[in-house]
Length: 323
Image (spheres, rainbow, N blue to C red):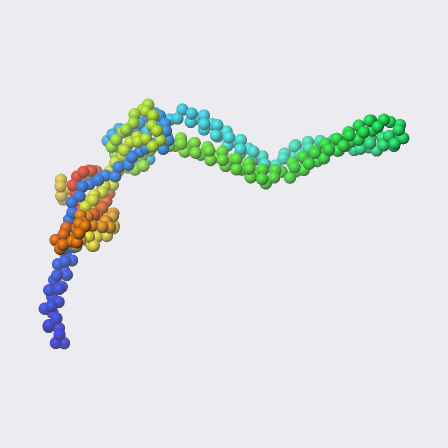
């Protein structure tokens, strides 16, 4: 109980120092220069420019058509690849459906006719065999009858095998090959359709056209720059804070920014990134004075649709007041 009066005079100065430090680091003020995200619109495939639908300074929305290109042989190539897809799809459908009833009936009738012919030729051989043994007919005629019988039997067997193939349908390997051919044709057509879509340049973001680098009639190579769009609804600034303030900041923390022309109109933003090392760091041991000069980079992002935040303007950033 006797220790409390002695400890109060010691703790009171420490408490005042802690409160002063907290209040000192709770707020900060730093100045940076505004930057606007610039998006370069380039072609993915070579082509000739047909139309450019925007001018520098025009406001565009994501998805708006900016320019149209053309390839002279594109339409013919699309027709050719579409025809190849149709042909391959017909082959697959035919293999899946199997033989038509009319085809089976015709094959059965042909087999019946060839069977009858083979039976007649075999009967002729059996009938002529005794005569040949008694030399009542020439050897050449009998051998010709045997050859005719063998030929008729072979034709009958071939017709029977063809009928069985029609009944069984194509082999699994042939069906797989036909499906693979269809997939290749569809992929080829899809690639050309993607090329056709790439000939239409669209705005990927909302913003304003900064640069119009092409005119109708020009030919662009793949990767050629056509336009540059400034994403005016998204601004950022790079500020620097001291080592006393830096540990109190975190990604996502709310901040406010003001322009010199609008000091009473703060704009809300957030901290997007924090540096991992200090700037302006000497390579030798730091003195106490040099440690106070250490600065850390902080990237701040804003989302302002009023377009007051123009690239190049200085902006003053402060911590947003707690609600």
